[in-house]
Amino acid sequence: AAAAAAKAGRLADASAALSRAPTGEKAFKRLFDEYSLDVSYKQRYKDSNAFLVYYTQGFDGANRPGIEATDPLEELQTKQFGFRNDVWAAFDDSRAEVQFLVSEGSGDTKDLLSMLARADAALSAYP
Image (cartoon, rainbow, N blue to C red; front, side):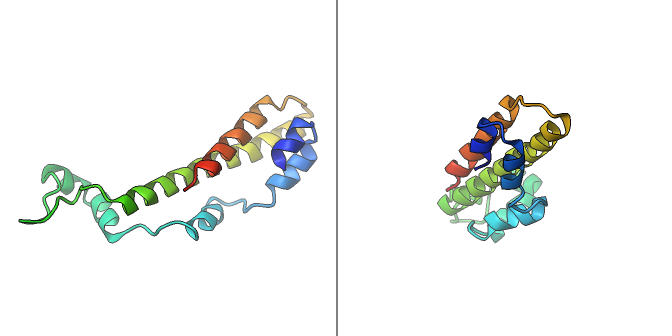
């Protein structure tokens, strides 16, 4: 709705459409987190012990696969959080841009449309 309004030059409508979503980063991301996989214990361990994991080359004990072995669920969770962050960045930029355009009385929506397209692309790619 925001993109259609911006294309038509209706900045007030675009601003209203963008204001329907939570304005804070944590609240916005929490919406995505409800539909995302949780961060696993293994991922938290790897993140907090990156130095150790790197220098042991992921050794996790004799006759066990390395801790850095590919895990499809871990890859899915990483993609979900990455796209969630991309949507937030583009959405927040769009909100700031529409506020700027309204305050300046400018009708140049090229940048706004680009930001909304980035948000839409990230949202469409969200697994």
